[in-house]
Length: 228
Ligand code: CTP
Ligand code: MG
Image 1 (cartoon, rainbow, N blue to C red):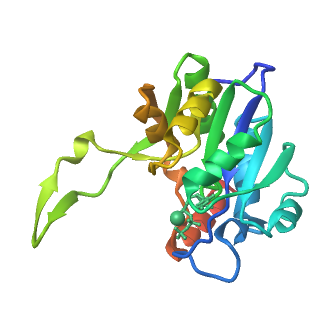
Image 2 (image 1 turned 60 degrees about the vertical axis):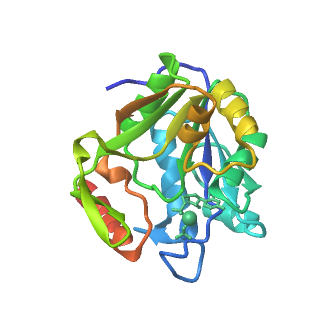
């Protein structure tokens, strides 16, 4: 396990501007409550537990005050800014509001239970020189690729599922996002890769699951109960 004992700031962008169509419900996904606290609050506190010192939370227009209220009492200082139509645009809006810090994490508000060790390991990989570092887990299901009416099995031994927080050297993230503006990538590591930066993999955790559908919220409730 690595420890963040450095006084240097580690800043994070938490993207929370999605609506959560697949989860459903009356409020945006990041404001849905897990064990008494909104998902966004869990996510910010999880980053703080892993050594993050300041957070920019990116939210849908009109919800700035609602999110600020939901984050009262959070473990680190935070700013709230308005996001864009895609996740990538929301990250870009967060980048525009970043406080100083050479290590920058980008995290989905929808991953509320990422363990502190995973956050620390991502930060440590960037401190050790990686321009981009991402947590990954093996794919446990057998995977088939569909093509037309048929399908073929895919060797899953070489596959990894990608989680957040993803960590970056500040200059790598900023320059890659500027170069990628207007082209759509699946995540920030792919944005960095598109301009030639190496992406380093670190072990993720099943507990860093992304809340996507109602089932995931039930799993997260169970994880919180098991943690005691
Ligand atoms: N996100 C964002 N801005 C967008 C779209 C997504 O900040 N324009 C954020 C979401 O708030 C979420 C993360 O990106 O924390 C991952 O996206 P996803 O899980 O797809 O969340 P939603 O887009 O909200 O959900 P859905 O796709 O079901 O509507
Ligand atoms: Mg989405």
